[in-house]
Length: 340
Image 1 (cartoon, rainbow, N blue to C red):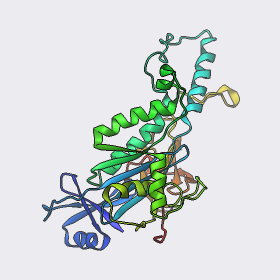
Image 2 (image 1 turned 180 degrees about the vertical axis):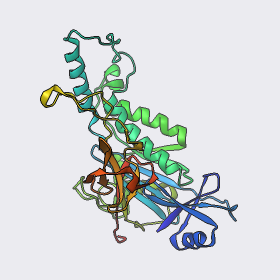
Image 3 (image 1 turned 60 degrees about the vertical axis):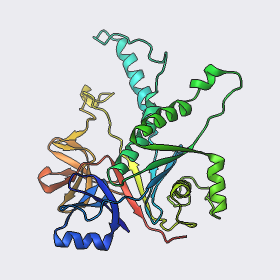
Image 4 (image 1 turned 60 degrees about the horizontal axis):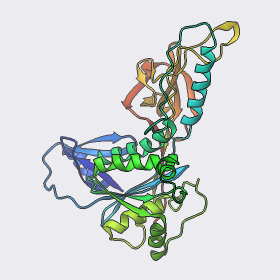
């Protein structure tokens, strides 16, 4: 188990072992903190050595699950499997239908906007999917001195002699173009084709399981690991197969009232990101339920949810009974596995 290390200015250094991190904390050399589910330490003194090894991040994109592996020549520091954001398209359709419904009433409404689909336009559902990957990359950069991102290049079926079609025919092609452009702002980018990833996996004698929705290392992170290992080397078999599973939280946009009225024609407030002064998704420690995250609110009470399953623990909790720990926008769960 390795612990990310940053200096007093939050600049990432080489990770250390958990035993050494405990000694640093006990002696006052370092201060512990959490970075959205990952335990880290911040040095209170100037580090004895600032030499950095090359650290690569392998990325295996997917439609339902995705894999990220952070690796150097010596160690695999973390494997992450994430769920994709797949609710934006349905939310946009509901918003569109409700807006069109309001326009048939005798009520003020905004003027129609110009057709944004003309020219270069990234659909909200596509943008949300690829921005989620960027958020993970940005989060990893805050903890590790990453040298390069290696991404498995995915392609949609194209047509011959149709330049206009092949340029913007698929949300997949448009989205990955946007993603690659943004990743290059963060660091060096290297692309690998799917058949190249397959060859790397076969040469190492590793097999990928067929269940894509499994939370096993061999579902998605096996590809992200071989991509990172291809660049930095150092291992023939995975030295770390434990996972950190991340599920993004869905925060509903603020509405003045619900879409449909309740009994008596009354409409309750709905959505938003603040619950009685606490940002939704924030990690808190409750005197009874322990570590959990903040959900919605009703009158002068808030709801708390389980950090791993997302199940609601209570919906009548006082804010005074909660201790704020950190801001958060996803729930997470650690899955330990023995090396292959």
